[in-house]
Image (cartoon, rainbow, N blue to C red; front, side, top):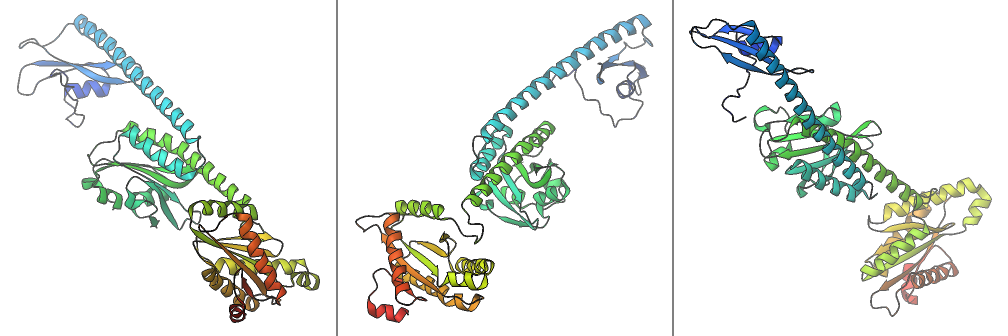
Length: 426
């Protein structure tokens, strides 16, 4: 307060100080000023919940005491002022709580509008930086195995998707202890080394654990270059926000997991056909070419009849594993139906797809038990085609697979290959 009549009570002063004595005891106190024959009084400003300050009086020089009636009157006035101060303080806290509840309600509504993980993370970062007027925000998620965590969102691009190991930095400390952290001046008081604080030149930081189903699954950190920037109320509000952000992220993760399972064949671990159709259609709208490999396990019915369906399932799973091991991250492998499998290779032509198919075909006999072979048919599309469609691409690949079966199985056939090249492939 800039009013010269309002001064701080320094509680570490000696106990003979009248203001300190009145504040601590909650009763009027009388004393003499050091080195001067002046009597001073301290009358506490009390409310129902505590003492909020002290009215400090100095009697005129030579006056040693004040009448009980005067002290009683001043005490009554001080008590009235204390209650008024307390009411004003409670009103301010109530208004702050109402504002916090409104912010939480708005945040929860906005978070629940999307089940996309990236949308939720980006929205949460934007809102937190806006509400707390922070310069930087990082959201860190602990991986399921607990061995490392990943920065799933940060306004500093250099930190996005960075993998963090161990309990290093503030995020590691928060995740290992489960306790929130507030740093007033990183340059003076912190015993923890933080890359985020160092690289952004931040001095103030508040960080809280990210809870999912009652367990610590990450952390949220806000920073600012000014020291002593964040208040204790900021610290408490962020704790409340983190609970709702954690719930939204958990819902998004469960939604993504359900979608993955819906698009996944449970036996082989490959995608299902309708998902393959959808992805190819999307690629045909954006890419300039792509290739499709259709794969059929030769004499698979004989394997089931001879060794049983359980052994047939094992063979199918092994072939599927070989396929997953042999393709790129951006390629899509799927179970087309029964013992027929498919691989879509974006932006690759038939001769590049041929190398992939041949790698798989040559591996299968040596890694399956009982040993089986496969036949492959390959077709491609490009933006130069008169008609680009999923149906046409599948039909041409299926015809190439039919030719491979017709020519004796255990071979790869391209849709437009000539006889000489077919002999080389065989």
